[in-house]
Every structure is written in C-alpha cells, then in structure tokens.
Picture 1 (cartoon, rainbow, N blue to C red):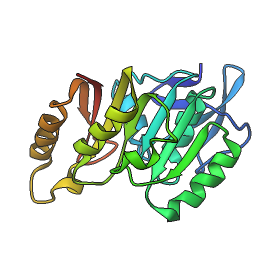
Picture 2: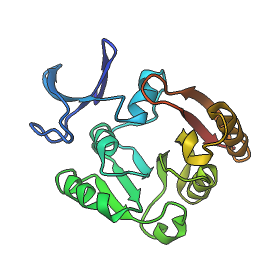
Picture 3: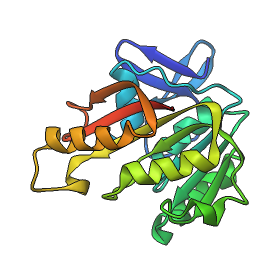
Picture 4: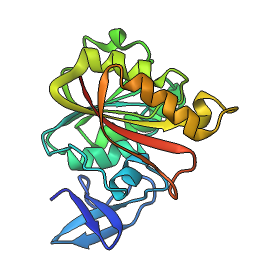
Length: 211
C-alpha cells in the first residue's frame, strides 16, 4: 500500500528510500519507509484527510497543473510509482527544483508551460487518469475544461483546488466558490466538494468527472 492514513496522519511510501523532499519526517511502517504528508503544505493531502477518495493507483497517469517546486507532486509520485506524472508550471524559478526532483524520481516529467494553453503541450502529454489543478488564475474553471477536453480519459477524474482570493478579493469566499461551481457544472459532474479549513483558509476543493 503506497498511501497510508494512521491516527489522523497521512503517509506515502517513499520511492527514494532515505531521502526527504521538503524536510518531512521519514518513518517505518509495515516493513517499509514512508514519508509524512503535511496537509498544511498540500491541498491534496488536506482533501484526503477531509474524506476524499483519490483515484490514484500505482499505474496511474496524472496531469498536475500548477506543480510549483514539487511538494505535492513528490507524494503523487510515491503513490503512482509505476505511472507517470506530467507536472506543468509556468514559472522558471520553480522548474529548477522540479527538474532536480525528477532526476531522482523517474515517473515525474516536468513541463515548463502555461496551463492556460494546453495545446502547446498536447504533443507531449498522453491520456491521463487524473487531472489535479492548483493554479492561481481567475479563469480556473476554464483552464480545467480545456485540459480535460484534450487529455482526460473517458473514465478519468479531476480535482481542482480553488483559492477564492485568486479569483476575487472583494467577494466573500462562499460567493466565489458558488460562482466557480456553477462554471464547473457546465462541463463536469461534481462528485464531492469541501472547504479545506483548518488546513487552508478560504480554499475549496472539488472532485469531478466529465459530463
């Protein structure tokens, strides 16, 4: 088992034994080494601890939009150790860290692209089982729809983390989340949604499938 929840804490089985990625604890569980996954540094970890069932298996192919330097990507890499993680980010400053991470984790493929322009990497990314999106853009729903149309397999799922202040700082978070949900429902069916407090303030995450 590559993902473990124990006494309210989350762990992934370490692909690179003996090495942490961002200073996380390494522990022995079930005869193997696991990395503790901090929900205050990962919205995906927070979602799992809020009861989300993540559709990730050892052979899963993932498109990760907004990968940053790879904190969460590294844990996805642990879970899908026989799969592929296409990690997209537009910022050159974080790509160096991501490239270093990919040098030790052969299932991570860093892509320096704008997630708003998926056609630019459509000749690289194959069909994926999961799209995970965490980008600080106003048109987050539109970005997800464009990527899902190009890359999501028929039975695939999407997860999108919404930060209300990235969309509109003048509106209450609940209003922003409602507006984004209405946009998402034009192309997706919502399987689950949840606010991420106490781990993340003014964030909401959705689990979706295409209509």
